[in-house]
Image (cartoon, rainbow, N blue to C red; front, side, top):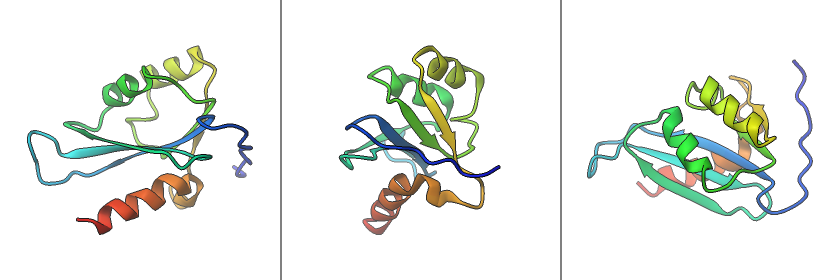
Length: 117
């Protein structure tokens, strides 16, 4: 499937989203949910106990972008997530397994966080 271009217009229109971990458990948390706005480069990094769709859906209750870029993980590609994104008219772009650069903004901050460990 050919890659499609995502045009970016406004702050908070396009988000890259990814999970990091598992890390050694600290205060019950072992994952980080990382969300990056593609225009402003604003980053939200939230410690989580699990890396499942409930964490992602709960995060999106604070607002949704017009487009969301993620990998093919089951925490992003599932029925509850698809229903939520469809309900709010969010375009879900999914990276291919061998081309994570499609979600480059999230990957850049993943590397920065890993360097601080």
